[in-house]
Amino acid sequence: MSLRNTTPFDLVGFPVETLDAGSSVLVTGDDSDALAETFAGLVGPSPDHSETGVVVGTDDIDSVVERVGRHRRGATDRLHVLTESSQRVPNGPETTTVDDTGDMTALGMHLSEELTDARDDRFRTGIFLCSDICRQVDDIRSVYRFLNTSFLSNLRRNEAIGVCTVETDADVRTNMDSVVKSMASSFDVHLSLADASRGEFRFDVDGWDEVGERLTVS
Amino acid sequence: MRHTVLCVDTPDRIERLEVTVDEREQLRTVTATTREEVTAALEERTIACVVTGYTLDSGEFGGLAVADAIREHSPQTPCVLYSEVPVGEIDTSEFEELVVEFLDRERSNADETLQFVVEDVIEHTVTAQVGHLTPADEQQRLAALDRYDVDGLPVEESFDRVSGLISDHFDAAVAFVGLVKREQEEFLGCAGGDLQSVTRENSMCTHAILQEDVMTVEDIAEDKRFAENEVLHNFGIRSYAGANLTTPDGHVIGSVCVLDTEPRTFDETERATLQEYADTVMELLELRRQVADETVDSREEVAG
Image (cartoon, rainbow over all chains, first blue to last red):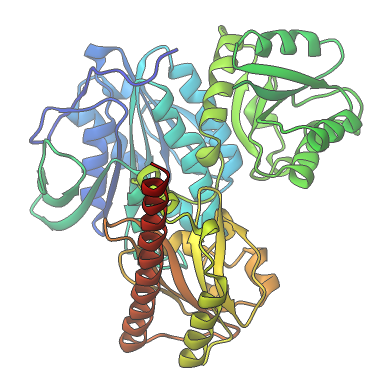
């Protein structure tokens, strides 16, 4: 059993080369391309470091998988996707169907099971898009509980990094700004999309000293 | 300090589970193989964690019975489901939000993983299964809150009066001064209601303290953070505004709030006014803390 290891995770498509093990990253913005590109750059497992990727996917997960494959050759072979049965990930990674990604208890159990299997390796995990999950549930507290119980706990216990994405213009029947602030308070790093144009995505950064206050992902 | 873990399983497997958990120095176990034993253990002892199988013996004693008992007697106690039943076959509606962790007991190293997870869950009980998120500076924030040693400061009457002034000013049903502690919110003063402490999961202020500005909720029934919150429903709350109590060194320890029984908005001027009330309350707390500190210093000088 291991807790945080000091060996950082390498990154592709970012101006910095690595992210510390144990880090949790919240990516927020109103441009789905920006979220997908950034998410893919962070969660794509590195075959060189015996890494596994486990992601919870809602809408557009196939787009993310395609981007992961583009970032790193062979990365999708080491990726495992938890998604609703209605979702199809063509030519993609191993997939577990979850009846309802809005059932936070079931989703948490599935994620725990997959991450337990991944414990022998380093792993990267992520949720794309958490705002879709927020839209599906009746009570946002169940999402917070899921993040505490299943997501952030597993980053604490393992040699791992985790990424959670929130589309800020999603209608989640609550104050999105407050939800983002709440989530940001529990994540180590917050990337907040400031501008997206011509395939370049500029983020305001909080909590990532090596990067500073601004980050451009392309 | 050793923590007590309640192990629940069938009679033929309970000893193995008990031995596994007992191997860790920090853990001691109590066991249960019936619904009555589960209930008795939760009533009689402080249980730090429950480890339970999913399929138990009789038709009436399965995971549901454990979940029911925990919900009734010790809802904050984390629970680990340790089962050979595949996740897809588990009826999650039985457990609602209780299960902290699922572990497949058939996998290799399952016992070792269980020990590790139980210790981790206990160590992080405060955040292990709660339905709220905590500020990044939570430990420092709680340390700052401790410095105000509010239990030792006779503030209730003062803050009841302040709450009354705030309630009158906003023509609101309820106003209060609340401190957000590790596991619950407690009220220093209140006007318009008899508020008892509430868990952070059920507290609106636990959301407010994560915002830099005044948090307002026009209609709780239309907000997914609060629409399913029975505590708020039972109290008849429909709208909320909360301004942070921020210590001089920047930690938010609680909120000054107004509640109403009808949906309402709070304009910019009202928000600013509420923040001024909060700042005034914070000054009162700070002054009292300084007086208390100086009193202690004086006593020590005399004694020295």
